[in-house]
Image 1: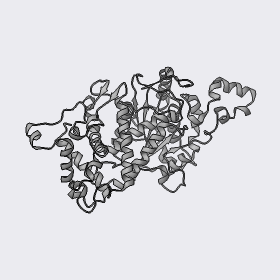
Image 2: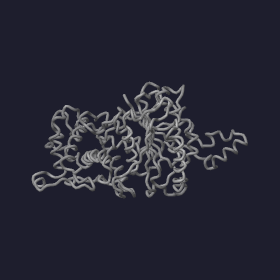
Image 3: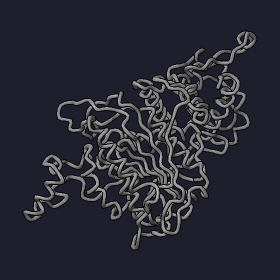
Image 4: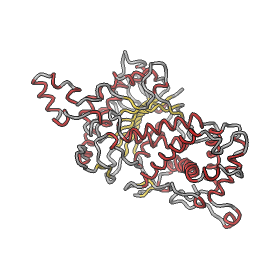
Length: 495
């Protein structure tokens, strides 16, 4: 089974994984893999971005396990936790993993500052300010990659890294998501890559790791931080940090470097979208941004490449490494589907619209119509989709996922540079008018003879239901809405 080990480092890593999860739920295809294995690395365990993403991943897994089938495009890609792989011991039922020695310690305690002699203390004080030494690492590295580079150098000794190594096969791939302007991601990306390319005994399967096909997206500044009381992160330093990191990457992670990635993606935006200032913990809950969606598309692009384009030589150098940037088809501050490049449009416009139709119906209309005896789509056959017959916990999982999905769309729509392609509130006769910037297919005869909006959708559901009754109700639900939304996209919505 070919796997993609997806390392997400820091808050930006979590938000990009969230965007990828939405795309997978919508049915965007991930090629050359049978399963995605997210590995989130963030010392700030109560980070709001992290906790939302983990809840989303668990909900996706639950829906997929009960509802996925060959008859449905929704939730098709498998997500696996690291602990489900192999037999190398129990770690966690989570997607987030820790570095030993970070919790409940300040940085000076981590490096044993009090035990150093006078000359070494003086040297450490040259490298790290008093604020660095006193930093509480339990809420991350607060935009200080010099701290992160010391702490995260323990990657190879962490139980999760051993578990990853023992589960890695020759056909597997690695992708690393990180920001370049913070602390955790900027330090974590080069150190993780170093530990993969330089793997050696006693690291399990080190030969495969040294020659792994590795892709990465490095996210440049795309938001600022409000300077709230007590917040130490200063977005005025983002550009300086980015320049320094890019210079390091150029010499150590690209070209002829032994630690070069096979494909490196760059993305960022003008810093016009300020987030609420927070040093970490549950206060760090940044609003979703289109840049994170675009960064998630880099993962899909990397996985679409054939193995022969991602080769690594016997001396562990990436052969003909590739570099990419993201661009729109048309520059816009209010991005809709027509503003995307043709490739991006073809990848996401129809899948996201179909998922939005499913979500809008389940949130606005399911309870209204599923209880009506005249609705064939809900009452026909042995495996009914009525409120009483459909698994309550499964419905709750879908409701929770839909809440995350609507929140994600709405947050992106209200950024300064917004992605406002879909309207989460369309219902009733406006049910098909959810795609902003696109005029629906209309004709006089259609207006006269056909039901409008949700009434038409109910007819399509009932017509699509009979061939799917061999599926149990949870799988039938996803398959039915996958089929019906595909019909609507082709006949009613001009995509």
